[in-house]
Length: 116
Length: 116
Image (cartoon, rainbow over all chains, first blue to last red):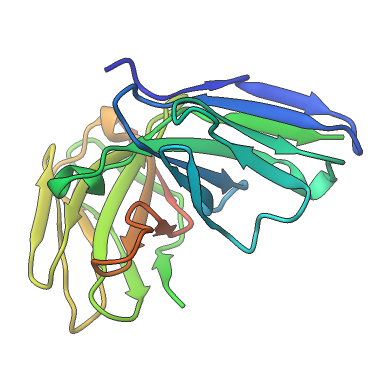
């Protein structure tokens, strides 16, 4: 178990630029989640995948946001035409379905995005 | 909709003091309840959970009891240590069924600082 890894740890960009984040889940985990966390708040659900299928998207995920998990392993989250309001910590989590173990999410350390 | 409210922080205690962090929730049906902890520079980790009314979750000396009558899930520890300094998040997951099994609703987090 090498844990959930996210890259990069920090990203600074100018308003209007596109950014892409990567998440590598724990290898045998078939579910992958993206959350967003702003300062002083708890994480908010954005979207989730089971294998390569994106099964749910939050209303928070505007048209500028797109997530993929092409081979059911790693995932990318892209934000187009970034806005200052996109500044946040973007968290990835993974889990394994089946029995009681699917209740436990394993979180990465996140990617901190700052939009100037 | 579902929501979680935590006591305002930050909380500052001396080592060996008693800790309570209040958490109340609003949800339809019978949610599962969780406490997550985030140590500095690390990802969120599941601390404990309870899946039905009157269940008590416990781990590392922390306890929380699922109280349906008061819609609460307060976190307690009898004697805190400096190493318990972290951010604590209360969270809920809606009742069993559906595809969003890992979709959690978090509270805003409570910063705990323990001094020697």
